[in-house]
Image (cartoon, rainbow, N blue to C red):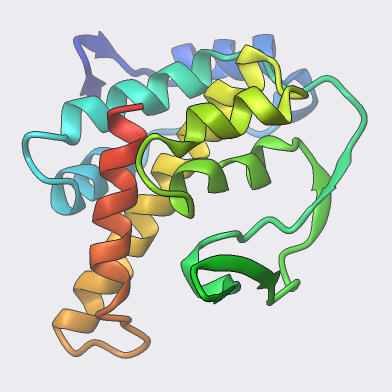
Length: 180
C-alpha cells in the first residue's frame, strides 16, 4: 500500500508503533487488502480536498502523543450532540463516549461545531492547548467530519441509520478543518 509517495509496509508500521506506542507494539502488524483509509477518504472527501485532508491527518499523526494526565472528555462532540438555543451553545447531550484521555478529542469541536474562523480565536482564548494538542485535535476533527459526511451520504441513499442532514454539516466542517 502506498500513500503520498511513501510505501507503507508492515515493517514500517511495526517500527512506528514501537517508537510512538511501545505499549501497543506486541500485536503483529499485517496489511489488510484494500486499505480502508485511502478508499474511505477518496469516496467521501471532494476530489479537490482529499490531498488536503490527508495532509491534515498526516500532520496530526506526526504530532507528539499526549503525555499529560488523562483528562475527562465527552469524546463525541459534533452537531447532533450539541444543544443550541437562539444561536448559542446551551448544552451537550449523549455522554456514552465519555472517557479520560487526550483533551484533543474534545478540542476537535473547535472546527466541527464553531463557524469558519472561530477555531483560531477559540484556541487563543482557551490558551491551555499546546501546538501538538491543536494538531491532534485538527486531525481528529477531520476524522469526525468524514464520519458526518459518510452518515449523510448513507442518508441520501436511504441506507439504515443514515442521516441526510449530517452530510452538509460534515462537508462544511471539513472545509473549516482543511482551510484552518
